[in-house]
Amino acid sequence: MITQKQLLQWLETLVQVFNDHKDYLTELDAAIGDADHGINMSRGFQKVGEKLPTLPDQDLGNMFKTVSMTLISSVGGASGPLYGTFFLKASAIAAGKHQLTDEELGTLLQAGVEGVIQRGKANLGDKTMVDVLTPAVEVYQKAIAQGDTIKEALVKTVATAEQAMKNTIPLMAKKGRASYLGQRSIGHQDPGATSCYLILKTLGETVEG
Image (cartoon, rainbow, N blue to C red; front, side):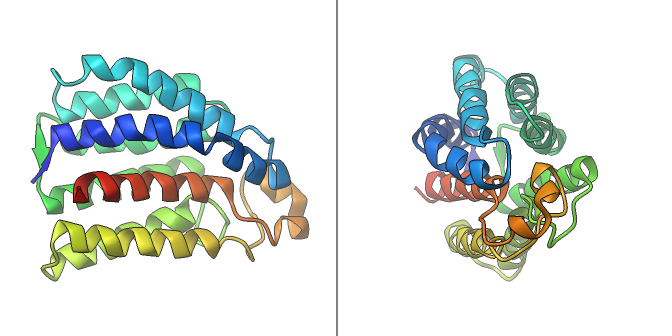
């Protein structure tokens, strides 16, 4: 089982992760976007961090809903609505629960991915966060279905996410600000895909631990 304490620790760690990677993400975004992705993600998760002390008394559904509303209200650009939608869809799966089975975590992540796709209208290959989320969550669900432990499944998930993030470099952006650059967007790693990788990597490290 994945406990509420572990998932709270995941969110707490993300506050620090996005603060540490603020300049890196902004640098990536400067090449093909508005140069604000790192700043926005750091600000959003700082706000989440301020809410965390109130969350242990709530079930996971309300916890993720609070994260969703906080990100939507405090993260600028497309990232706020997209990550907000991810956690909002996750909250519906986690409603009334204080822990998740390995399978339920997969269902929660899949719901989040579907929400992002529905909200952003992006497909695989469009050079967005979908290019990381879709294959990574598929690998997680397949690993759990074939009997892997949560640790084994998350190791595969994070490895897949890292490769998928790198695979955005040769793609031409078809969504968002980067799409305005056309061919000039080729050769740059997508910042949204990178922040997705960081979220999944941190989840893996937290739950494995």
